[in-house]
Length: 360
Image (cartoon, rainbow, N blue to C red; front, side, top):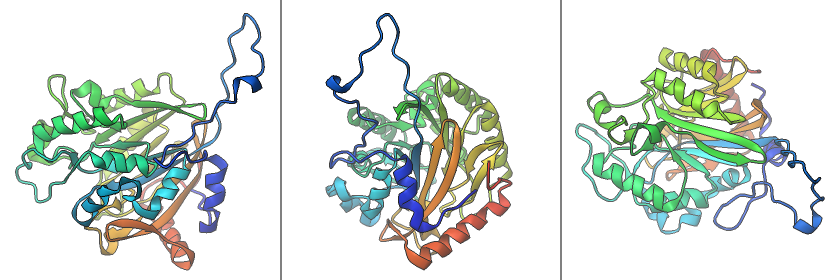
């Protein structure tokens, strides 16, 4: 992977990102000129489809609103702190929402940590410039069936795009589709991490709601093939790996290859609570772990954070950059200067054990 100097992040964003929208963090998606300025359409011929433009996609890691972060939801516009400017500047931004969206429910049995947040969490993500999130993770159903019903209801009311969770398997594995600067994008979310005693209860089936499980590899492969149809770019967001392990597990590497073979262009994810390496597999981009992002208990090594910025042209990731941050008080604070340069160098070295290439 070609890593840019930290000072070049503005160049990367400017090259592919659209202008920020209003105070709610919405983004312009390629505004249409006034009708008076538009050229006349040839009679009897369908208008030509505009060529897709290069875009920048931003990925953040594990996000919840526990502890000191809960009070920040009182002001959703500033809940994610200074990192929001990076998210808003990208053409598309995504995070892993590692919490149930409920104020009720029963904590999952046998779990040491259970996370939940009120529906204001979805508002906070939107206001920070996040465009889509995955709830397919080992905390997405922390408050069991009632929490799932509340989460699905909150998602429906808000209209905020969430992948990897649904009223049944078809909805949980279904791709979220959007068009950004002429690029038809499909995003699938799933988790490879589920507590053994909760796999059955949490996995969505044809008869009940739950999460999309990446343990079912044939179903994941089919989900990617379905997403490939009618799309220019397919992204798969996964919860995978082993906590605090800086190298991918064999099952991660096997799944990444299967999904790339099925048509995925970008495969990203997290769970380890520390950053892992990324790079190219058969010309497609894979990143094994974004680490924590907005996370109340982060400290020491688990406080190393950042935003992964990918410049995409067609189906190809042409540039990749890690914009490092240090989590303080639960919020990722962007790093600058020599400290940022040193962290980028360290992060770049994490690729060594991934089997991925630095370039396509």
